[in-house]
Image (cartoon, rainbow, N blue to C red; front, side, top):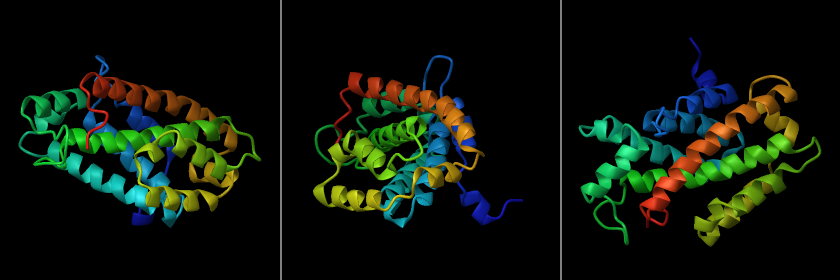
Length: 216
């Protein structure tokens, strides 16, 4: 049995395996595997240092909300992101214009994780294609500015900027991946990122079709 510390250790292989299971044959996104993939990404965030807590804690609370729906009496409606969106919209369970009676709807909760997933995808892609001397602080802030920062208030953007400044170098990141030498990490990122990207794109398209990309 692995001890609690082992359980908390990030492993890129786990994230890869989980995102492999995320899509059905019809390209629907299984919420259970999406949430499991995010649990792995939270370990990654935690391994970057306590300054990333502001994103990590938020992701953990969002995961908890989605698990609550998955395990609740209407759990069957939450099997996939597609079925969740359909169910919540048909039953008017989403605050579409302003925060009202459903501040923790599945649609809104997932949207917050979806935005953060884009940032991590962009950052990991930069890590994969960078060279040994590339600055991780720059890679991370560029990725953030292209994604999550668009939705964050000034204070959080400021905190994020501070967190990026103290990031370890690329070799330390590759060690955190827990899969072996750098070339193996690069290969595994090359396998994992298209899967993460596909899950992101399918979710993005669904939300765009339903005008859900700006939920309050």
